[in-house]
View 1 (cartoon, rainbow, N blue to C red):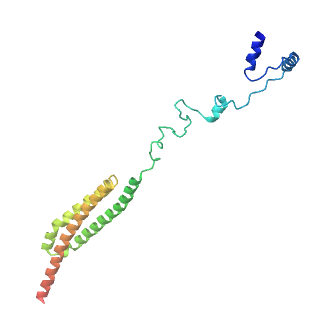
View 2 (view 1 turned 90 degrees about the vertical axis):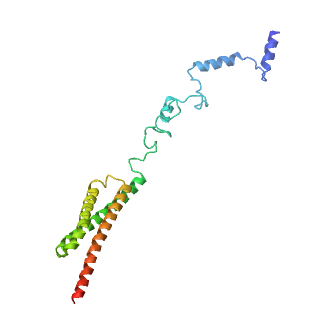
Length: 204
């Protein structure tokens, strides 16, 4: 009964038991004892098998947070490039500010030079001007000298340190004062010139 039950259970798997061959079993054991190494498993052990240590070295370090310790896509959070900072270069607005400042600086210097030449010319003709003309222009000429000194000092000591907007405002303010004073001086000179023409015409 036990033998019949054993055969019934084994046959339930779908395969019939083969008769036990003692000679074949002994031959197989003898072959294994002759030093034949067992067959190696295939290289691919499936997705559940961990890679060898050498494989891990080739892949690079890997931390438990899921980031690549050698850099990867996340990279070093302390890297300025990763923080959106330009690599030691000024931004576009700063470059534009510098370019505009350079052009304005040249314009400012040329304007001051022109006023300096105007004052030299006025100084040269003062001896031949009527006394009343010199007196009328004296205040405007002194103000023009003061404005020039201030503008030259600004260009020399403050211009480079200031932004373009501040420099432009200062230039426009000085330029307007220059123009106002020049117009006053020219007005007095023209009036004196016209008066002299009238006087000469009367004498003729």
